[in-house]
Length: 76
Image (cartoon, rainbow, N blue to C red):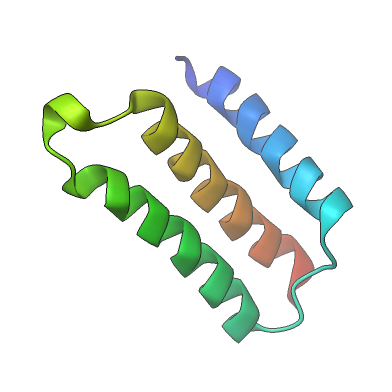
């Protein structure tokens, strides 16, 4: 996928999370949410290559990016 397409998907993920959840209150909260997404990505990475699900690891990377963006926007 082109970068522009990925950015659109990440922006949509960001918007969905912002509509569903209150803004981050602290760096600690942002870190814990991002870490959860990284852990879910790591779960895919640890699988043998033939058992990895590309849709899953792509989704997790997009969620990491969206939550990092959210931290940048929400926190002063």
